[in-house]
Length: 93
Image (cartoon, rainbow, N blue to C red):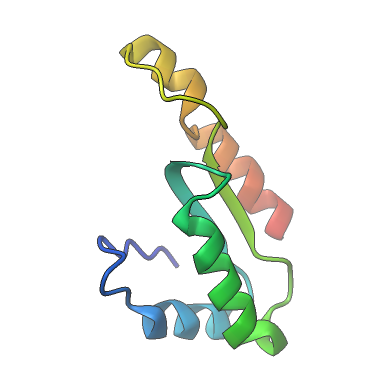
């Protein structure tokens, strides 16, 4: 399942929790840097509310830690790639 919440306020927690309870797995992806981003809060809430339903650790993938580059060519190295997302999903299997 793929959930694109679009907003963080209000955040549709129940849709996320229902999906995690159904699949037993979760990966949170964001273009924000990993450290200090809202993805950590999402992971925390999922673990807090769905711990007994999880079959694997909740994984998160974000941009590299640092200042976002302004050049489009450098963004490819900074932001999560499709390959990184697929690799992370395979860790959940």
